[in-house]
Every structure is written in C-alpha cells, then in structure tokens.
Length: 163
Length: 434
Image (cartoon, rainbow over all chains, first blue to last red; front, side):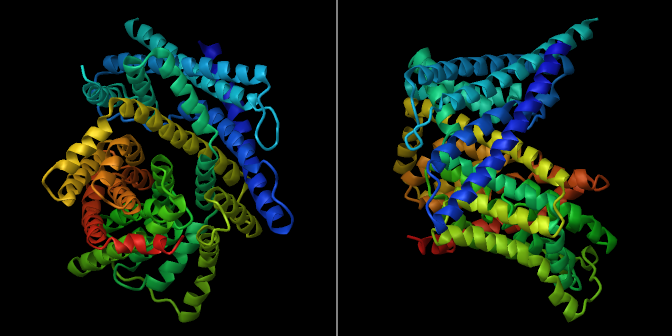
C-alpha cells in the first residue's frame, strides 16, 4: 500500500506540474491572440485550443485536489459519529467514488480511442485532439487511484484498530 | 413509481450521501445523477451521458474563464496588493471612531474588485487588518465580524467566481452578471459601514479613533490604490465595451497583475507558484461542481421534477414574492450547513427554473440568490469565512465571532430587502449593455 501511496503522490505531483504549464500557456495564448488581433490578425484556433488546454488542466488537477481535500464536502454530520462508524462511512465513500471514476475513465478512453481510429480533427486548426481526451481519461484514472489508495488506508486503519 | 417520485427520492439520497458519507458535493451530485439516470433510462445511456458531460464541460471554452479569474485573485492575494489598499483606506478613515473597521470594508470593496473569492478576500484582509485593529484596542466583537463579513463582498463584486458559475449553469451572460453585481456590492459595503458607525455610536469602546494623518500623506497613499483600480477598469471596462470576452478579460487581468507586481518587486517565485497550485485546486473543485450539477440536472430533467415544482409554485394563489421569501429562507438555512457555492450549484437546477416561472428577471434573481447564498459563508456552523478569521486570530473565541457577525447579518438582510424593493439597482448597469 505504501508503494501505491507513493505512486499516487508522485503521479499527482507530476500532473499538477503539467496542469500549471497549461494554465500559463492559456494566459500566454489568450494575450497573444488579443495583441495580434489588435495589430495584425488573431491567432487561429485560439478558442478550441483554450478549451482543450482547460480540459487537461482540470482533469490533471482533480487527483491533487482530492489529495489535499480541496473538493467541497459536508462533514458536519460525519464528524459526530464514532471513529469506527466514520471509518466505515469513509470506506463506502471512497469505494463509490473510485468505481464511478473508473467507469468515467473507461468511457472517456473509449471515446478517445474512437477519435484516434477515425482520425477526427478540430474544426479550425485541423489537428487531432484525441490526446486531450486521453488526458482527461488519465486525470480521472489518477483520481480513481487516489480513492483506491484512500480506501486501502481505511482498510489498513481498521485492521490496526482490531489489533 | 412515477418519474417525479424518483426525482424526489434522488434528492433525498443525494442529501443522505452528502451528510452521512461526507462525499464531496460535486462527486455526490454526479454519482446520484448517474444512478438515477441509469434507473430511469439505462446503464449505457447513463454512462454515455456522464462521459459526454465530463468531456464537454471540461473542454468548454466558456469555462476557461474560471481558472483565469481564480488565478487573478490568488496573484492579488500573494502579492501584497491588499496591504496597500488597506494602508490607503486606513490613512483616510483611521482617525474616525471605528475608522479602522471602515477602512477594512473600504479595502475589502477594492480588493473584491480584483479578487473573485470571498475566502481569499477574508483571509487577505484578515491578515492585514486584524493586527492593526488589535494594536488600536478595537473590540474583537467589531474587528472579527468586520473581516468575516467584508469578505462576502468578494462574491458579489465582479469578477466573482460565484457569478461565473451561476452564469455558466443558467446560461446567462457573465458580462451582464458582472455588471449587475457592482451596485449591490457597493450598497452592501455602505450598509456594512453604517453598521460599524451605529455600533461605535452605541458602544464607543468597540472602535476607538486612531491617530490623524496629514493631507499630503493621505494623498500619497492613493498611489497604492491605483493598481487595483487599473486592473478593475481594464477587466470590467474591457468587458463592458466588448473588447474582451470574459476569458480574455481574465487573462489580461492576470497579465497586468503579473507585470505590475513583478515591476514593483512584490511577487516572489514562491508566491507565483503558490498562486498556480491554489488556482488549480480551486478551479478543479469548481469545474467538478459544475459538471456534477449538470449531470444531476439531467437526471432531474428526465424526472420532470423541476418543471413540476415550477408549475406548482406558479399556480399557487399567492404573490411570487411570498414564494421568493420561502426560497430565500431555504437558501439561508441551507447555506448554514453546506458550503455556499456548493449549495448554490446544488439547488440551481430546481430553484432557477422556478424563479423564471414566477416571472423574475433572471439577472436580478441570480444576484439575489448570490447575495443570500453569500450569507451562508458567514453563518455558523459551516461559515467558511468565520473559520478563516479564527485561523488567523486563534485567540478570538468562536462565540465572539458569531456574535460579531450577527450585527452585520442585519445589514445583509436589509440589502436584500432593498434590492427586492428596487430591482433597478441591479438592472440599471447591465441594462446599458446591448
């Protein structure tokens, strides 16, 4: 489990770094588009690239946000239960989220594979965009991994409790 | 079982998942929406709907506005702009009784004009203003409430993340929502200042007058306000004149803030990287809140529940304002237990169509809902701004902060009543835009 925890940690660190690069790229691209639009002509395909950059940025930050408990949750009732009950509830929570995001990963990967097979291209730049769809699938897969790790931690915690 | 009954059960299950499992709001809405859709239609339809919604929401150009404005707010937060704003406001108002608290609200108002988050506004201003108010023997019953409630201006004054989310979720113009928020935010600020003035008249020891400052020094302090005003004018002016889309306005705001703060040597590498990481975390949270709400909204749409509720409410033989009052009470109570943005996103699929069916102007209605939801950020037990201030000043008792906030809640309620009586305050500025 320690190995899985480390893998999850380093993967999320790497993904948040890449997401940061995409955020900066979005600002540079938009400002360049505005400037060039004023002095010459707009950067072709800015809108579609911004959308895809935003998709990768969001998906890559999902796991890191979960690791730092950044997703809004309502813990006001849960905290009133005993530690044992809290552990069970957390376990159910993690397994539900893990399964859901594994399903989302599977379906978006399938969609990305279809885009790859059909050679689908963007409207303006005429470039393939399946890598962005795979990027979103990867972000969801890593989030699912975070939940799996959290679930295993809960299991390990409960065994320790029994011991 | 009828589809509507399934919709009601879906909402109850969602509440159970939220409260008893402590599942993040966005994930809970997505999972319950997925399961409900699966139950009514089929598994394949449900998983296809979820995957399509996740992909299309994440890759939507319209939503790219979110990380950019959040980044702008964090840059302002990490580069000390707030300190200069507070310093200027302090020099102008500090010698009045309660002047430091008034200066805090004034600086909040200006900081909110470049930062779209109430938590960031409260945290920034708390770090700057609380030590000053402590130094001048301000009673914590005034100082803590001022910082907690002043932060709410960040939600109403554009650019506001909450207004962006409402705009995206209800397909309203973000530009019009931003413009609509300006006068209500100013009204709210004035009412907060009046609250401080009244409190200091009744309890003079709450806010003793600070030292007087010469006119030259006052005038010099205004330089610190220029950069914030510059960013605000560039962002909102660009939107108003149609030069920028909201996303472009966000990017230009970020660029300008980086240039100004780097030139004045106030943005460190540490602050820059921390702004990026924090922005990514908040953006990802907000994106999934919106995605979860869309998925849950699709489930509710197949149950026809929102339409039934809207039809039922609009057929009731009572004034729409009675129903509005009822909705506002739900938001007020709900905001006490669920994070304000989460609660807003959760309830919009039902209450927004209802408001429209009752004949309310969508822009006005969105601002009213924002104002009420914002109160959730300052009401116990989940009021996030309260805990921000508690973290900044652990010596202040939570009970004291709650009591202090209660004075300002009156101002919040009065501002909402004024906006209901005079909707023009909200609609006049966006009405000037075609």
